[in-house]
Length: 582
Image 1 (tube, one colour):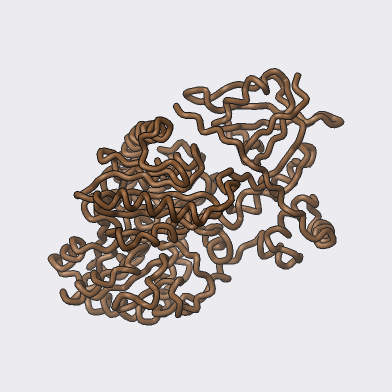
Image 2: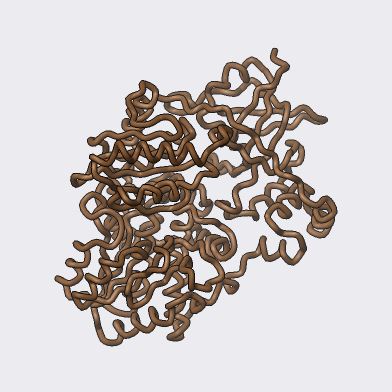
């Protein structure tokens, strides 16, 4: 297909205070490397380690610390008591559809006057839409709860009010400076005047806090809302919010419910994805479950994802899950083709920009996959990347960034020529008129060139937590390492470095196109220690390794399930060939 191999720079983390590491290793009875990992994560005492390894669901924050929560709860309760129709409205991505499913599932226990709405990606685009509000009015809804969107929808909220519709906004995106929609309540921990202790909740997380607050206010059992956490952990993992603080607790218990008693729709996806029930990790959500849910909104409608996640019948869940799985297979075929076309455009010079950034445009590309393609191009060329297509008469698309560059700021600098934009530090979307495209490219090139003075930022990094010998990877070491989960931003899976290892001769290419390596690595010691390893997209190293040449390898350690057995496996992040070649 296309070569994603790039020279990467390895950055080895500083060890931290040696005395603290030694003391913590002794008090906990763990390998010093594990104590080193704890110190890197700000865990310095026995009690802090206990809290880290044993998350407590009762330690999550009081939802009423969030600005406007009292107003939101009161307005929802009035709608429930007075029999007003409530419309739960959310974005078409995983965060939005899980958030809608969570709040809808909770509220339908309290009222039958409840519905949900997911805007069409192609027709309405992101966020609260006039079409959606017209739908609400035509069907008699008097309260709309937005999830994962709405924080900048000033005009749309005013439009809703003119129709006699109240809006409660549950969002986690940055609001406009000194301006909020005139909604019945605005829940967003990123509000300047919000004193909530943790501001990196997902959109679904804000929805969960609303549910928690309602239950708390009206004496509904807290235990009854905990099964909703299987939806929340899917959101946390898929939306790449940090898995620290409150998110780490919510993700921990969300994985517990996802593994022990997932809702029917998620169980259907688990089976369709070929995952091992009871052993799911954040990675399984990110790479298997999330993309399938996203495929509904990309290829058809996000409403299908909500129908799956709220299904109450096994047969219905399997039917909808199979439909979504088919969408995902179609999506993969389309994004492979478009990615190859985009890579070819960059290499043959027919892209709009390939200097400080990568900008590619084809009006015929499928809008639903441009975000995925942008991520692939970042892997291939490691520059801020924009993948654009045409929809409803406008140029529209997605952008992805590289480590250390604020993509949102760059796009915001062109706000005056954009019809719409939104997103985060490393991922964003935008819409503009086609005649503005040359100016956008010129300004983006200038902005990025002025901000990025050091060419080293265009070299991808591998952050290594610690050096490790294979002999240290004992069953106890691995058992404790697993307790560092759930992994994700802010608590990434530890990456280790082992030097001077070689394959035992059984290494082979694997995968449909032979692009991956399955290795049996040996580190010479007394006795020899060997570890199984998988190296994705690293086939270019095969001949050197097969010849018996030593390499340095950096990797994370994962569980490998095969024919009922469970063993640790190295997931290789990168390889460096050594000088002493055979």
